[in-house]
Length: 293
Image (cartoon, rainbow, N blue to C red; front, side):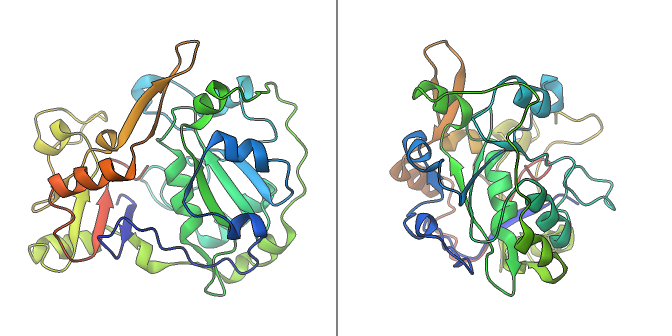
């Protein structure tokens, strides 16, 4: 079943668990979004790690790993959400086990206490998925790392004058020893995850206790547009509300004409959630899309 992102409040305020070894860099953060200017000012710090999690819809025939080798933010590593997944599931890029998540991060040089900057080539698309995966992780009931999303992603970085690098000569990384050693006791925060059975129960009781919010396009939600994957019907779980993720973004482009997206201002986000009826729900929300990205 699709991985579903869940939160327990209808407020736009993001609640952060405190990492067990929070650095001064992480402690100074006030938002899960960081700007290219913030990254330029902080990327040289040893506790700041940069991960490209670019993923593209199959119909686009683009490859995140291949594009990473052609153009990336210096010192970044590639986190493949298709490879770091639940190998026992027949569904695409489902959450890996907590242990596998720790080991994957460790192999990319992430250590406990680090601030992990997630970005993608589109702007705001797959990077929030990695942010969510990292934010679910717990070691001894605390977050081992602080994930953030680079607003606007790679193209916003380029538009701000940021340098890029290319080629297979990736920056050498020192494996995250402590986070790897903790893999055996790692867990996920269950309050941030819902599965098929959770959503089925919500639908069966008329979503009286939990509200599902579908982030797909209005056409796919309403059944007037086909799903991009063959054999899947469009439409939605009965009683769900629809907030297309694209309605929460602002389009921009680099001086060379490369398009990207950034998050809309908070007041616009609130207005769009208000218009969809989400703000009035007053109960836990479960967010879903097509395949969990």
